[in-house]
Image (cartoon, rainbow, N blue to C red):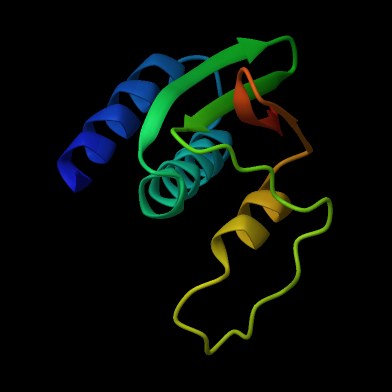
Length: 111
């Protein structure tokens, strides 16, 4: 599984690298990694993954096999906790997010 996630992330980075700054590329990679790992761990697997440049934003969308809509406000996890910071980091690095049953969770990063 980890190899598949790595391949997906490398492909996304290759396609975005000419269009966005290294900082935005890093944020996109971190967000995509967190969403993919969460879908694998808690969503029954990844059913769909996509990314696109949309105007002044990068949109990353992940849909797990089981629907998951995170709460509107993500609570902070204890910094010493082994888990629980992923969605908080996604929230901190993105400018907005959206959810639909059909598409899954979409996260937007300002370019």
